[in-house]
Amino acid sequence: MKGKLLVGIVAVVVMFVTWTVMAKSSFSGNEPYKVGAIFSVTGVASFLGEPEKKTAEMIRDNINSQGGIKGHKLELIIYDDESDSTKAILAAKRLISKDEVSVIIGPTRSGESLAVAPVAEKEQVPLISCASSYKIVTPPEERRWVFKVAPSDSHVAEKIYEFMKEKGVKKVAILTDSTSYGASGREELLKYAPNYGIEIVADERYGPKDTDLTAQFTKIKGAKPDAIINWSIGPTQILATKTWRQLGMTNMLFFQSHGFGNKKNLEMLGEDAEGIYVPLPPVVIGPILPDNHPQKQVIMAYTKEYESKFNEAVSSFGGHAWDALMLAVDALSNVGPDRAKIRDYIEKKQNFIGQLGVFNFSPTDHNGLSKKDLIMVQVVKGNWAIAH
Image 1: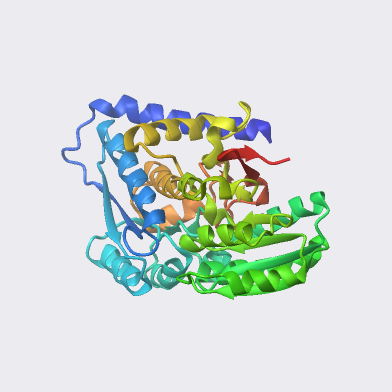
Image 2: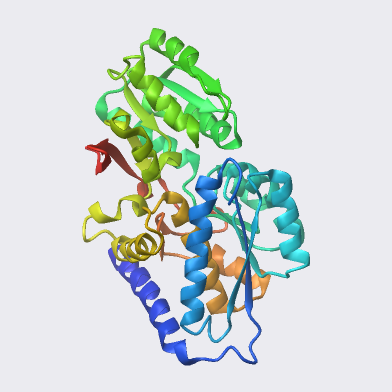
């Protein structure tokens, strides 16, 4: 396995070297390779879509400054779905029919991705989603043209439960928001709990715009769980953490879903974040990864460039865009702009060293990741630390 990973790392390095060698190439006479992108740059999920857009544009600029993809300019056409499923569908249709892109990356969230997936299937255009829900690529026979790079909620649920089992946790309370992301997460938490000897003693839900979770936490407090899992994105992640601390419930271990993977959350929470657990992809904790970690080199290169360019910490979400666009570029470099060939190439791709993990796709797995690609971290003194 180590040999295969080494080959994957070498392949990524060779790809970058190849672009550098082609720096003197001319775009003249070569049609550009078109990649579409749908991100939630504005709206309620803008904190996810913004780093995705920045990352994608940074990659595009790098590739074009180094000669493009085998002499073809990378044309990246980005539309903002404004965190709205209807607008995501309209963007996808425009990218396919008007812009005639070869592949689409995004959308940012599960809801918009689930809305766009049928469009990609009908029009037979490869779609590489940046969202989490396993339903985006399931069942695979109905999602032949759809892939995704974010860890699946099933992987996250199992990673949390695996860690809890090691800690001797038996009783758990879950809180989930009513978005597609929260609903899918809740489904997986309920599904996998028995496999790890976990009893769900409280199952509370709330809206993504709720501003008071006192009632939900009061019910949870009465159920006396050993631990609490909150599954949401946006302001409710902050609200849930603060409520847990304000109600004096720190004797119960507190877990956030992978949607918490943004350093800005720690900055907003300050001392209130201390001690919480989060399963995160390696991209978020590059500096503290062991030197022999298979993704270390690729992650640190991205981290240093992104943070110096934008003066903000990398997040899981920027990593989603990196993996999605680099997969698309890898395919374009090897098989050209033919949509069907791109689909077939990605489906067979093995040992792709990304920001989220080491991807191994197959006809029955269009995500290519597992729970092993996640790392359990804990907030210690305002920063991420590998949990033990």
